[in-house]
Length: 589
Image 1 (cartoon, rainbow, N blue to C red):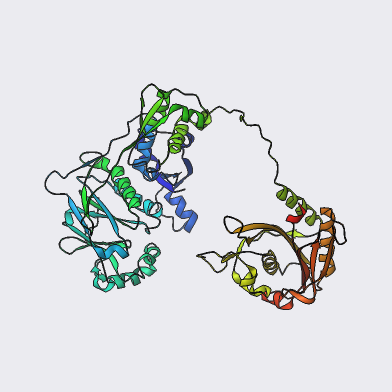
Image 2: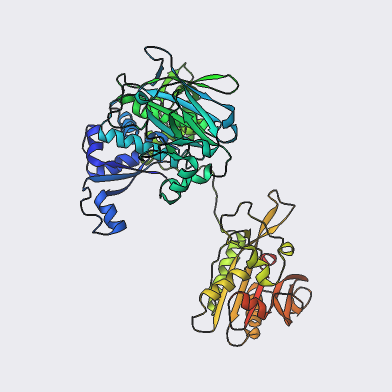
């Protein structure tokens, strides 16, 4: 969940009321938020960097509020205050309006066909005659950063650029050029750089280096020019210094370039709806035209309102309440969803504003009704369907075996379900092809390339990590492995297995064999062929020749035990002999 930091005094001033910390925590809970932490800038620096670095930092109290990831309208002070005021019925939800410029043509952004390979979409709008203060300006910048990290997916889907319109002149051109052909002075720099030089410059920048990979390997870099050839921005990396906004900016040109047009529209709507309240005409946004390479012209921002109709009975049944149609309409209106009763059949018409892109289905409206009603106010009821819960048989068997293996002197390990190809193949003396492992399509690290097909590798790595402990080391694990299975709709299935390892100065095959006998005794399987269990010699590259046996139960092979091959032991960086047991426990259910 995103966390929004707001100054307590500024928040209470905007709300027009002061709360104690406990009262505000309760208000957040009622609204579906969580007051995560009460701190200050000084406390944060002191905690992260030490007392010396914190000298001179602000002591202003900050509220850190956890916001649902899909509520982009609550990512800044303005949206948070607006939502809480409407929720407490101290204000009505504003109506956002797109207007044409009072004199002349709207600003125009022309997209060229070269952008198709890098960032094919763009949207734009103008905030006219806006008044910034230091707090408003900081909130404006912070909202962009929150959106970049959230819905914009770290600028991969959308990149936001804001510019002082009075320093540039339209129409604007969004194109793509070779990096060597792009030269401009980037934000907060004093000299010109080429795009190639900028990429080298920002490799050491703690903030911007995380975005370089988005276009670094592209033959063309996206860039936006004004009619005089001045560079506004090179999305998604950096804006130009020439058009940077400040507290004194009166007219803001906002452009969002994107690989996902829907996300771009949402981001633009969020920025203009949150800060249009500071315009000379509150909650009005000046439109801008975007011309596509095929000649289409689109007008943004859309600021689209839409209506959904649902019944009071639907909400009552799903939430578990019994409220009148009028009361439910009132509850929804408190959540910035203007609602009214239509007809005599209990129908409610709900208007979804452009700030609520999270409302996709009737269930989202129902959830808002539940929040507005108050989860604590919903009366506890006994479920109409009478059911008795019980543990899955496989899990019950697993838990019973864990207890008895621990009683036998073995310590339980819990290892990762993902591992490297080397762990389950090369180190165990097998080829990756014969393991039949399920591969991760795009692994982020060499340690997590495949789903494990055996527990043995994980347990041996655990032994290696603890080899300085007193001997002997006796470890076990009962967990799932993943096996390919064409009969399953996902092409694979989980298989519950038991693996135990004995590591000492001597191999201790008799210890592992004794553990097998104890497990079979617990499972009620007697020694013998046919319906019992027995072992017989087998060859396996993981085990020492002549020291490996296959375990049969009820006439079927269920696993193997034996002394590990010296090469296997060495590959796991172990120095002592080791014996192991690896069996499937599902046949014993």
